[in-house]
Length: 201
Ligand code: FES
Image (tube, rainbow, N blue to C red):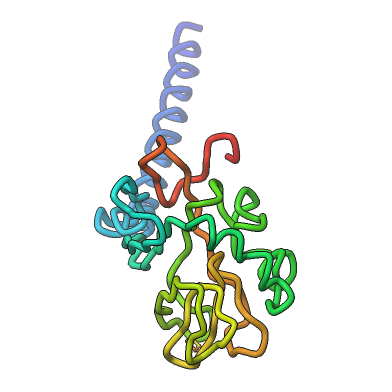
């Protein structure tokens, strides 16, 4: 009787040990695979959010910040540039960004100015045609490529044009508006690129 109890106990112990060893074996086998999928510190840094000071960006000026190896344009738009936005609506492919460009901005930037605060434009400076970096032509004046220019971006590669909200004009090779990355205001003079606003999360 006493032996029986011991045997039961031993069997239980052996079963438990086998289970643990089996479990450890599975874990040991799985680790190399998990390691392969873990992003390196460099990859993590490359995908990390970027916090930038916008206090020195003057009215009408554009400053480019790198984020995920992409140039992000931050523009301090003037009241005149903002007032010009509706004037070009009829010349754009998708003025409300709800058609071909519906996926080109977070919901909180799907508005007339394509931004959180009207004056601050934040867009990825990569042409949606074949990936060149568009040039900035902020002045409202006739340009060689557009006699009715209201300010915006001109891609030197194949002449695509975007307005001051990064919205693409009709009749150019680029199919979509410039992409608005996730971003939020940390305070009035600091934005973080790569992270949505808390209320949008
Ligand atoms: S890459 Fe910009 S127009 Fe072709």
